[in-house]
Image 1: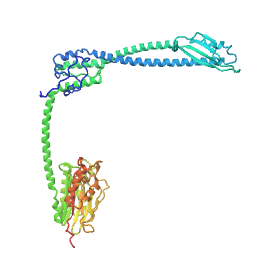
Image 2: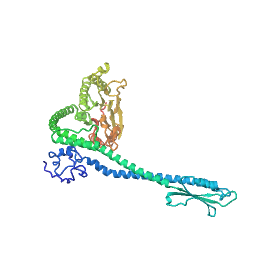
Image 3: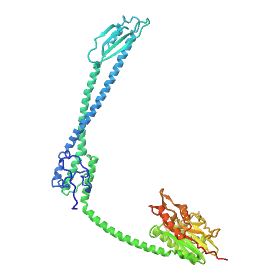
Image 4: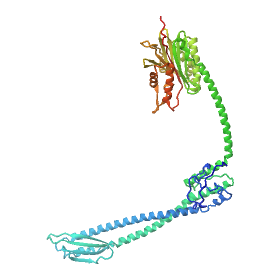
Length: 569
């Protein structure tokens, strides 16, 4: 027991489905996955007492549901059917009255035309007698122009006015211009009324038949889709009370309604939960042990990665490597994960400053392994082979990477299993302070130059180093740039990977791009390089906002120090 107070439940209103009253929100034991089932004041103890479910399983008062539905719905159905039939009968009666009136009007007009000749007041017999042949004829009166009765046929109209149809027609004057007269014709509507009464009787009979059919259909439908599934559910509850873990079959010819199917499905889930309780506890304990083992393994992996990061950082040179050569240097290196695939090299050798930035395929551990290959290859190229031209260094590095990754062997064998499609983008600057020039060559990376508040971007060749050959690779080219501008001011040089410019963020989630990075560098061009790099890093974080970084970042910025002029010849 938790000791928390239990809210008092609403009092019971009866023991059957019919007399229990409407359910109240929150009465269901939601913890067991069953909703919409009313509980008692004792939290269900009365329902689960021995014998309670067995008594309910006998289905007492379940048939009262169909009886209640019939009593509630049959008056509505009867009223709707009666109203519909009465409206139809009234419309039919009105149409018949209109048609009979039009027929009487036609008869009167035809007879008036037949009488419209000179001497009609004495020769009216045949046309008037022809009217008397109609079964609905009651009377006809001929009047002259003065309103006097010329002739009368039939009986005087009596009774109620809605039982007869009366029309009048004018008799036009003849060729001798005798005064016009009028004909008044009365037809009986008693036959129409009799038909309307028959329709009312038929309406009552049809309504009774429809109500009986509805009652039978309701009983069959409720019995098949409600009562039978409820009996199965109550029987299953009785067996569960005896610790027999049975479930309710929702298929078969007597499929339950959607609501009862939901209740039955919740009951099945409850039974499965009760039956698998011990197994779930064992599984939970095993999961906790597995989680502990996973946490331990993850700790070992993170410890190894942190150690690998220290090794990778130890391989990277420090920013002070070119300080003795008279250059101000600032570095930004930030892997996406613990270790990364971005690499840089800074060295002074033979009076030349060498700056290399490389962006290897991928990031994380695979990229870090490639940086080790690049670092080893650069050490051999620069020290063993003593290459100093940036285009020659790129060509040699391309050959070493292809050999180490077995790309040449894979290509010769038709891209066999040993071949790979990895590589790197690389930019190399060789600085000759004695002559005041810088030689640059790039493969997939560009050199950004800042001078007098203007940004210039010098691109290398489009294809990187390594990767599978396409036959469209451009030759490596060298570009020479003065270290100072025309006024003698020092130029600032930035060699960076695309992880710096590929920053997604802003209100419209747009890519920052090289132009955005150049604008940030231009705004802070008057600061020391270390402050420029710090301002760039802060601007990148502000642009990203909550968006995560997408790649490793590496940037090396350098420029000649003030007062360090090229050496005189």
